[in-house]
Image 1 (spheres, chains in turn brown, red):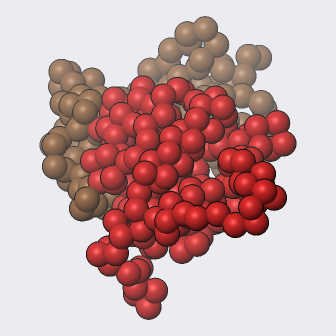
Image 2 (cartoon, chains in turn cyan, orange; image 1 turned 180 degrees about the horizontal axis):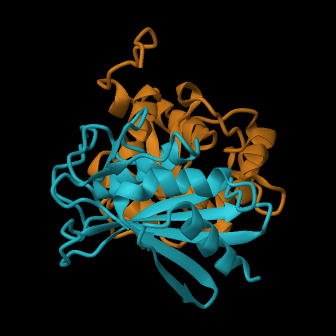
Amino acid sequence: MDFKEKVIQQLNSQFPEMKLETTDFRGDFCIKFSPDNLLMICEFLKNNDQLKFLLCEDITAIDWASRTNRFTMVYHLFSLKNKFRLRLKTDVDDSTTSIESVSSIWRTANWQEREVYDMYGINFLNHPDLRRMYMPEEFEYHPLRKEFPVMGIPGSLPLPKK
Amino acid sequence: MGLEAKLQQDGFFTTTIDAIISWARKSSVWPMPMGISCCAIEMMAVGDPKYDIARFGSEVMRFTPRQSDLMIVAGTVTYKMSHVVKKIYDQMPDPKWVIAMGACTSSGGMYRSYSVVQGIDQFLPVDVYLAGCPPRPDNLLNALMQVQEKIGRTKARDFQDLPQPDFTKQY
């Protein structure tokens, strides 16, 4: 059996009532689901003996700018045991711009979520240390949001006196 | 300079204090290598035997600002890094000079972006701008020679009113 089918089969048997959308474009297998199920799915994918997605390679987000669900979270997982890459996508709640942190599942998600918070301003609930990663801590904006001008906002980053 | 010939002939020569001091200054410019990114690789190449910065009396790369005369800012200066660069520049004793090495340092270069300072002359007094991305080592030597020329035109009393560095200050 194809490993992609196996992932879906395992998820369906564990969570029969859950709605999962899958896409498979040029070998990039992707599962989309509701943000309420994020922690359950991640924990299952990591701890299931046959799947073992132990490595969280990257966490990032997409700003769609005009859609109703403005931000989409993207998680890239890798199973060392099965040598298989998996992408998870889930929409961020528009009213609060916040989503559950997965740093309790993968410790590496701690800094990756800080980066997403810095660049997109998405709040991670139950994150142990949600501070900015790249920009100075007193900076007020989130540079990768679509409305942010590429040259920045004049005066928002202080220079030393001449 | 023909100095040796002159000394052999007469055994002495006359000059002015200004000339001898500026000659001594320009012949021993100690650089502070502020290597921030890829320009620093070319700056390292300047120190090797092929280009040999020692020919100009500047082989003593001091990795402390307190023993340096010339800051070579080599690399992309972000807003976050600008405070560090300035802090190190402030610790250099006067008189001091600055080379803005490469496109990023001079003008932001290819990084027309919110995070990169569009030219370090916004917070540092730059003496020589250096084109290239990164500049070739001979280009940096040329910049050093221009700095030397600039130093050669100074007089000792040009710097008498400059504040002395406060080495007790905690940065």
